[in-house]
Length: 280
Image (cartoon, rainbow, N blue to C red; front, side):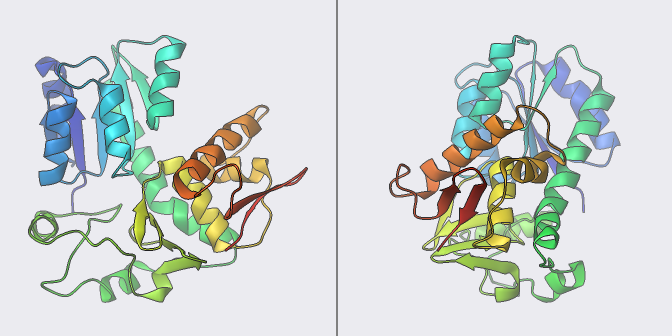
């Protein structure tokens, strides 16, 4: 089934160009001319990834990404003519996963989309395998899919029209799957490896793609201490000088969303001189 790309852009020429290449590459495309319309589109047409301009009327790209991250963790690529380092930093800090400067090569855009969707589909499985756990196979996932009439939520690798119609007509579930094979639990935290969602006491916790990878790594091996280099590698596949600072920012952001008192964390503990671990 085709994956859906949401284009949030007020320049119709760019929308038409991207739509042409994306549909030619087998993607479904939905569009919006500003952040407010994009949020409404997502309520009606769930997407797998979003391409977002920065300068738009009514709600700009930064504000859209922040609003999106409160409820959704789909990958986001900013496409903008604002290419100063500060613009990129603000966008990435707001929750974007990539940045492409205008003018752009449409083939580069489609390549980045493929890479992000591929990485999103395999991140959790890789994290679980690294910790000695295995993710469910595609056949197992299909065997445990909701029956007709039950709530259905689009997964990271497929969401057809019939699936979306069911999701629109049925309230989205607010708790993780009851199938224990697909849920990692630490205390009152539950990580649904099928839907790539984290719950605390049954309440969903919105996380960015990088934060989801870190939490999947932690929850696959509770009590195990991970170095900052190991955590960075689980996000990007390799570490480099200065990557520790990036991990510290991600952990701080996770704590701000997860902990009752981020200064006295009950879940993600710092092990001085070694790294981090998760406790229940």
